[in-house]
Length: 386
Image 1 (cartoon, rainbow, N blue to C red):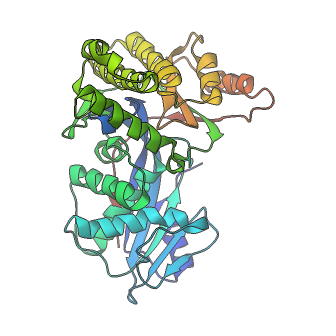
Image 2 (image 1 turned 30 degrees about the vertical axis):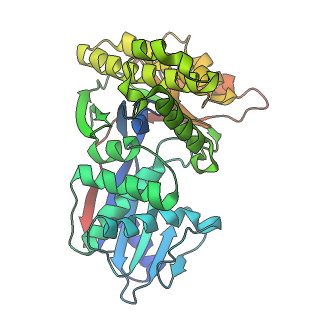
């Protein structure tokens, strides 16, 4: 899919609402490079902002109404005032931009009294590439621009996370919004989530990223994400620490008998995954991509066997990718429970190789995975003002 131009987005806005937009903002999706569920446990994560985006065009609504339209949806959702509760049904996607609008007040930022809003995306929904965070950040930049406001990247990420936690109901950490806000081409975003503190790690263009989207629904609100979140907090409490990332692997091993078998597995994944994030950042600084690949695959096996947020479809893809001579490593990306596998490859890995992996995966009854070749990209920004 060719990304839309600002002129095309403006024309669609004009056809939808009968007037031109005032602003167009854009935010990238992200790949969770490594750091599976470490963020809300106070650990570290590495993410890559990617060259797939959500665009949000907006203009004031002089009647003080809220009108929202997604280019992938059937019709405009029109609200005479903020409903104050979550929307259900086909319009439930609007909870994200409405949550951002409500969060502006929580952050003591100005709110437009009403707005017309248009969303366009080339991010596959439900693939674990964080289309929700991209929508939140692009919406925040667009709505603030309507009232003459701006927001630096750290607070932008915090506002997006607040909207998703409080108004959508997903207890996510800062990885998604932080990566989308701080992304830069040719680098990964390193987040020490305890702060949070953001920095960047070099990522060579000679190491392509490939996404294999299983097309399984990546539904975090359905309860599995929240269950893992609760299990981690329960494990930390039983171990006498505020957050699991407070422990080293050796410290956990000496205390693990305090935990039930299930909580012990969850804790081991988080503590060892946090160590893998630090080892991956060190390996990237040295340019040791072979080591990076081994750490990525180890991360997946931990998600598969300890955190149990993988699926047979995700495991099947990793099993196909791992022995390929041009694949350095592969793992699920995102919250799990569906979604996609990320593969880090050598530059000799081609589209034909990816198609062959997809063909072998798609033996009946599996559906063919969507294959996406990605590059790192810059973070959220306002593209155009009228």
